[in-house]
Image (tube, rainbow, N blue to C red; front, side):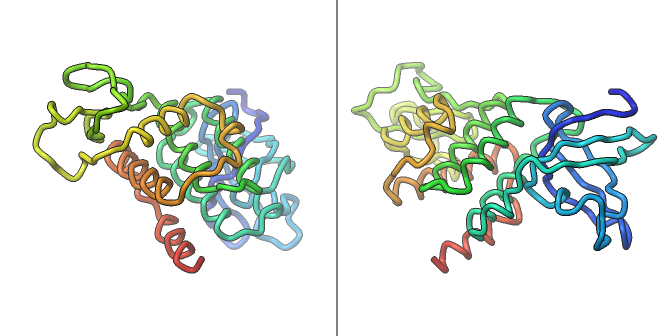
Length: 253
C-alpha cells in the first residue's frame, strides 16, 4: 500500500476521538476493512459533510500514517440513509454492517464480499421483502467465508437428500443429518423441512438481484431467520446490538 492511496468503501461505524475528529471504520473494495481519522468531521462546516455517516458508499483519498490512516478527501457515491427513511430497513442495514465488522479483519481484501455488501445496500432501499434479502445476504456471506453448509447429502452416511424424507440440520457440524443417523438431540440440532433445505440452496446459488422482491410466506421466513441466526451464533459468535432493536420494531409493526 502506497503512503497516499485511493479506494472506494462503505462506512461501517465511527468512534468519537475528540471534540472535532473521529475514527471511521470502512470496508473498502481494495484493502478490506480499514480505519482512518477524519479530522474536523464533527465541526458544522466540515469538508466531509455527511460522507462519513454510517452506510455511506464513498470514494476516498487516504494517507497512511505510522499507526493509523488519515482521511484526506471523500466523495459520496451513494448514501443509504438519505435515500431510505424507513427505520426498519435502516436497522436491517446496520445489522448487516455489524456482521461485516465482526467477521472481517483489517487489511484483508475481499472484493466479492465488498460487492455483496454494496449490492445489499442498493437493493434494500426499496425491496418488497427486505427480511428475505438480508437473510440471503447472510447465507452468501457465510459461503464466501468458507462455511457453506452441506445441504445435498447426509453428513454421516453421505446418502443424497431425498425430498420425501425429514432431516435434522446439525448446525455444529454444518450440514444435514437423516433421522436414522441422528445422534443425541441438542439445541443446535433442529428439524428442517425439505422446502427450507431447497430455499437455502437456492439463496446460496443465485444473485441477490434475483432474490430481490421475491414473495415468501411469513412463517417460512421466520423459520429461515431462526436457522440463519443460530448458524451465525454458533460458527461466528455473532449476536449483535441491532438484533434486539429490530425485534422491537417488528413488534411495533
